[in-house]
Image 1: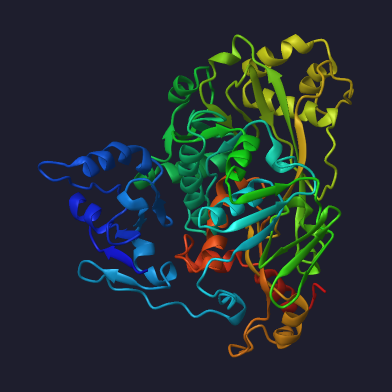
Image 2 (image 1 turned 180 degrees about the horizontal axis):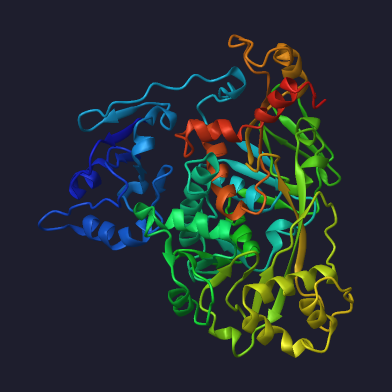
Amino acid sequence: MQTAVWNDIPPLRELLAAAARNRRLAVCLPEKRIPRFEPSEQPDEAERRFLQHWPQQSACLQFAAANILHGLLPQGAELWLMPPAAADCLSDYFSDGFEWQTEARPQSPAAAQKPWFRPSENRNGAPPEHVAVIGAGIAGAATARALAERGVRVSVLEARTAAHAASGNRQGLLYAKISAHDTEQTELLLGGYGHSRRLLDRLLPDSGWQPCGVLHLNHSPAEEKRNRRLAAQDWHAHLYRGVSAAEASELAGIDLSSDGLYWPQGVWLNPPAVVRALLNHPLIALHEDTPLSSAEYDGANWTAHTPRGSFSASHIIYCMGAHSPNAADANVSALPFRQIRGQTGVAAASGFSKRLRCALSGESYISPSWQGQHCYGATFVLNSNDDAWHPHEETANRAALQQLNPPLAQSLFEQNSFEQNSLYSFWRNPLCSVSDDLSAPPQGHAALRCDSPDHLPVVGALGDIAAMQTAYAKLALDKNYRLDNIPCPYLPNAYINTAHGTRGLATAPVCAAAIAADIIGLPQPLSQRLRTALNPNRAVIRAIVRQQPLL
């Protein structure tokens, strides 16, 4: 079904009437401003409902990527709001075609694609009956949900328990630490932030998160420079704005000595609650303690072998996070991943700390209290495969919180012999040795995150690495060698959604939607530029060019 498209802001009644004929409506925004949909002189019930929900739905509207809004239009129709850059290349998103409701907007010619970045030819235009998703963290749960909401039955195979690893933190923050420049990462983070924020409103309306706002403080000259550049982007003033130390203090409810960037729609959330909500769908079956031993394709289906039996599905999607280097399929494990260890701490709220109204972020972070406790951290240890809780990292997290806000740290840790134990001497002299015998029992969370060398997620159809190395071997002699006529040897119906690093709350759900769209043949939430940047084949081609084959 083609998408109905307007090259200006239509009257609200016209937009709503079109929803009865089209499941998807797209409006090209003429500028980087939140649009105003004008109601009729006597608004009907549909118009009043739209206007009632519009402020909440548009609160995270951004102008770096497509905005997909649910629940505003009748008949379950989607409303796509396309900022100017996206409006100039609609075929990137609507490959099945679109129909202009106004005079057509001139379109930029489609950029040429290398064969290894062209879409897989596995799609047949119909949703598959059954898909196997490997991993039940935020990426796996979001991928399963995106497919289930489109009528696909999903089996989620989890080696341990859902949300036990990087998605097991007690409180995480949802905002976007972005560059002021138009990079692929900025586009992904802003688009993903809006997507995840609206997803929370839909999935968890009552519990497991709080729209508290996030204050990102200027903790260094480089950070101040970046945040000031962002604050100057007035078209995003509803998303983020610069604040003085005095305004930051008023927003936070405690005194702050630094200015920064405020995200009013930022939230803290409980990742396990989000994962459980995503998996709570009648078409999703979760199988815990079911590690994948091997997987094979018989020409029609994948068979996933586990100690608890075998599962057959037409498609397989790897969402294994930090366990990706240990995947049973070498086409996953051979990709260049980095494991990053992270540990957070939890402290009982004090009388002073309960005044904290929004989340604080700098070189470390702390969330407002939830159920009488604060979550803070986190450590960042590259190339570590250790997921045990360590007292010395708790010490480091407390020291980082002391740097972020000394009175807050003092109030939280004074009940734990703040000035008597080794932590105080550590803060006074970071070079001294510290005891691992902390007075408070471990209450935090330690886990491994997965990252890629270029810090972008790895998302999309999986190529057959050995076959690609043969097909594109001449790139090792000349990276510009023309191989446009050699189609990419993709694995049949195999996909990946991983390497989200510390940004998975913002990036994993929108990437899940992109994979579901690719499998089913729906319009894409991500631009072609972004799909290319995230494509797992980028690592294979880079390795061939550098004469460092992955297999």
